[in-house]
Structures are given as structure tokens and as C-alpha cells.
Figure 1: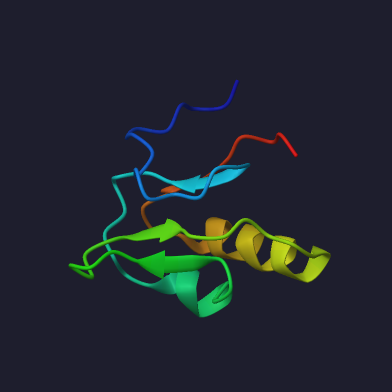
Figure 2: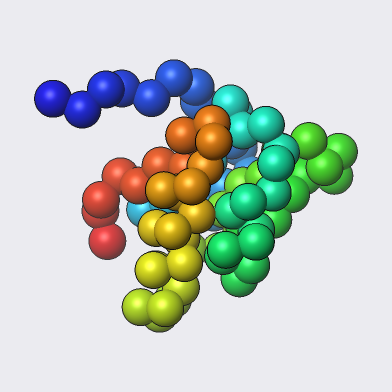
Length: 80
């Protein structure tokens, strides 16, 4: 059984499979690996999915970002 992640989805996440939890610490690694899919809020304190992946390359980039997130705040609900 997988451990349940703690936190709530950030309200600015684009609707879809991937989302960032409000436990994001704003480090920016997600943007480094998936620049086409993540953005930051006006305060610059946290990131969110502003666009769901539209290609296999972007999907790979988002998976890479999720695997490297130090807060484990990037989620994939698995629904396409």
C-alpha cells in the first residue's frame, strides 16, 4: 500500500491528472525540469501545475520533476 501524501491540492492547479499540494516549499525544481507545465503563484512561495502535459516528452518531464520534488508535493492521480 502506498503512503498517503499530506496536504491539499493547490487551488491554481490546472484540471487534470497532475497537481501540486499546498505543502510545496517553493524550491522551483519542478520548473527546472518541466518548464512548460509548472508555474509559481504571485508570492513566489509555491508552484502549481498550470498546464497538463500535452506530449510524451512533457509527461516524462513532469514525472522527472515529481520524482525529484523534495517535499513529495507533486501528485499523479493516474487518470488520463
